[in-house]
Length: 147
Image 1 (tube, one colour):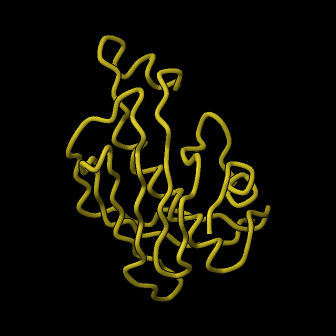
Image 2 (spheres, rainbow, N blue to C red):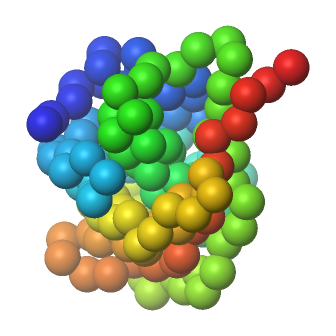
Protein backbone atom coordinates (compact mmCIF):
# COMPACT_ATOMS: atom_id res chain seq x y z
CA UNK A 1 0.00 0.00 0.00
CA UNK A 2 1.23 3.49 -0.85
CA UNK A 3 0.27 6.79 0.79
CA UNK A 4 0.46 10.29 -0.57
CA UNK A 5 0.70 13.35 1.65
CA UNK A 6 -3.10 13.59 1.99
CA UNK A 7 -3.36 10.07 3.42
CA UNK A 8 -0.38 10.76 5.70
CA UNK A 9 -2.15 13.86 7.05
CA UNK A 10 -5.18 11.69 7.83
CA UNK A 11 -3.03 9.25 9.83
CA UNK A 12 -0.56 11.52 11.68
CA UNK A 13 -1.25 14.47 13.99
CA UNK A 14 1.98 16.23 12.92
CA UNK A 15 1.83 19.34 10.76
CA UNK A 16 4.33 21.77 9.20
CA UNK A 17 7.05 22.37 10.21
CA UNK A 18 7.17 19.10 12.14
CA UNK A 19 5.68 16.65 9.64
CA UNK A 20 8.73 14.71 8.44
CA UNK A 21 7.25 12.07 6.12
CA UNK A 22 6.37 13.09 2.56
CA UNK A 23 5.30 9.80 0.99
CA UNK A 24 4.88 6.16 1.87
CA UNK A 25 6.24 3.82 -0.77
CA UNK A 26 5.15 0.55 0.80
CA UNK A 27 3.50 -0.82 3.94
CA UNK A 28 3.36 -4.44 4.95
CA UNK A 29 1.02 -4.26 7.94
CA UNK A 30 2.53 -5.39 11.24
CA UNK A 31 5.86 -5.96 9.44
CA UNK A 32 7.47 -2.90 7.81
CA UNK A 33 7.12 0.48 6.15
CA UNK A 34 9.23 2.28 3.56
CA UNK A 35 8.70 6.02 3.29
CA UNK A 36 10.56 9.12 2.17
CA UNK A 37 11.44 12.50 3.55
CA UNK A 38 12.48 15.00 0.90
CA UNK A 39 15.04 17.29 2.51
CA UNK A 40 14.71 20.85 1.22
CA UNK A 41 16.98 23.82 1.82
CA UNK A 42 13.80 25.65 2.91
CA UNK A 43 13.47 23.54 6.09
CA UNK A 44 13.32 25.96 9.04
CA UNK A 45 16.02 24.12 11.04
CA UNK A 46 18.65 24.78 8.37
CA UNK A 47 18.72 28.49 9.29
CA UNK A 48 20.59 27.61 12.46
CA UNK A 49 21.94 24.07 11.87
CA UNK A 50 24.33 25.14 10.39
CA UNK A 51 24.11 28.35 8.33
CA UNK A 52 27.37 27.76 6.42
CA UNK A 53 27.02 23.98 6.08
CA UNK A 54 23.38 22.91 6.62
CA UNK A 55 22.82 19.38 7.91
CA UNK A 56 19.62 17.76 9.16
CA UNK A 57 19.77 17.38 12.96
CA UNK A 58 20.10 13.76 14.07
CA UNK A 59 17.16 14.09 16.43
CA UNK A 60 14.95 15.03 13.45
CA UNK A 61 16.18 12.01 11.50
CA UNK A 62 15.06 9.88 14.45
CA UNK A 63 11.74 11.75 14.56
CA UNK A 64 11.19 11.05 10.84
CA UNK A 65 11.79 7.35 11.51
CA UNK A 66 9.38 7.49 14.47
CA UNK A 67 6.69 9.15 12.35
CA UNK A 68 7.07 6.38 9.79
CA UNK A 69 6.75 3.87 12.64
CA UNK A 70 3.57 5.62 13.84
CA UNK A 71 2.14 5.38 10.32
CA UNK A 72 2.85 1.66 10.40
CA UNK A 73 1.08 1.32 13.78
CA UNK A 74 -1.99 3.29 12.67
CA UNK A 75 -2.19 1.43 9.37
CA UNK A 76 -1.73 -1.99 10.99
CA UNK A 77 -4.44 -1.25 13.54
CA UNK A 78 -6.78 0.23 10.92
CA UNK A 79 -7.01 3.47 12.87
CA UNK A 80 -6.43 7.12 12.11
CA UNK A 81 -5.31 10.04 14.21
CA UNK A 82 -7.93 11.23 16.65
CA UNK A 83 -8.17 13.52 19.63
CA UNK A 84 -8.03 10.56 22.02
CA UNK A 85 -4.71 8.86 21.19
CA UNK A 86 -1.10 9.58 20.34
CA UNK A 87 1.90 7.36 19.54
CA UNK A 88 4.72 8.26 21.95
CA UNK A 89 8.41 7.39 22.09
CA UNK A 90 9.23 5.24 25.10
CA UNK A 91 12.83 4.51 24.20
CA UNK A 92 15.64 4.87 21.68
CA UNK A 93 18.58 2.46 21.72
CA UNK A 94 21.68 2.17 19.58
CA UNK A 95 21.18 5.41 17.65
CA UNK A 96 24.01 5.88 15.20
CA UNK A 97 24.54 8.58 12.60
CA UNK A 98 26.62 7.38 9.66
CA UNK A 99 26.54 10.29 7.23
CA UNK A 100 25.16 13.82 7.12
CA UNK A 101 21.78 14.45 5.52
CA UNK A 102 21.87 17.69 3.55
CA UNK A 103 19.53 19.86 1.50
CA UNK A 104 18.56 18.10 -1.72
CA UNK A 105 18.83 14.63 -0.19
CA UNK A 106 15.97 12.16 -0.11
CA UNK A 107 15.95 10.20 3.15
CA UNK A 108 14.51 6.72 2.66
CA UNK A 109 12.91 5.61 5.93
CA UNK A 110 12.94 1.84 6.42
CA UNK A 111 11.23 0.69 9.63
CA UNK A 112 10.58 -2.92 10.60
CA UNK A 113 8.61 -4.27 13.56
CA UNK A 114 10.95 -6.26 15.79
CA UNK A 115 8.34 -7.19 18.38
CA UNK A 116 5.16 -6.08 20.13
CA UNK A 117 4.67 -6.80 23.82
CA UNK A 118 2.13 -5.29 26.23
CA UNK A 119 1.30 -2.52 23.75
CA UNK A 120 4.96 -1.52 23.32
CA UNK A 121 6.24 -1.69 19.77
CA UNK A 122 9.95 -2.17 19.15
CA UNK A 123 11.21 -1.21 15.70
CA UNK A 124 14.47 -1.60 13.83
CA UNK A 125 14.73 1.71 11.99
CA UNK A 126 17.17 2.80 9.31
CA UNK A 127 17.45 5.85 7.08
CA UNK A 128 19.30 5.78 3.76
CA UNK A 129 20.45 8.44 1.29
CA UNK A 130 21.24 7.15 -2.20
CA UNK A 131 21.66 3.64 -0.78
CA UNK A 132 24.08 4.73 1.95
CA UNK A 133 23.10 4.22 5.59
CA UNK A 134 22.64 7.63 7.22
CA UNK A 135 20.96 6.77 10.53
CA UNK A 136 19.93 3.68 12.46
CA UNK A 137 18.30 3.00 15.82
CA UNK A 138 16.00 0.71 17.75
CA UNK A 139 12.85 2.69 18.54
CA UNK A 140 10.24 1.81 21.13
CA UNK A 141 6.82 3.42 20.88
CA UNK A 142 3.37 2.96 22.34
CA UNK A 143 -0.07 4.24 21.53
CA UNK A 144 -1.76 5.92 24.47
CA UNK A 145 -5.04 7.61 25.17
CA UNK A 146 -4.72 11.28 26.07
CA UNK A 147 -6.84 12.98 28.70
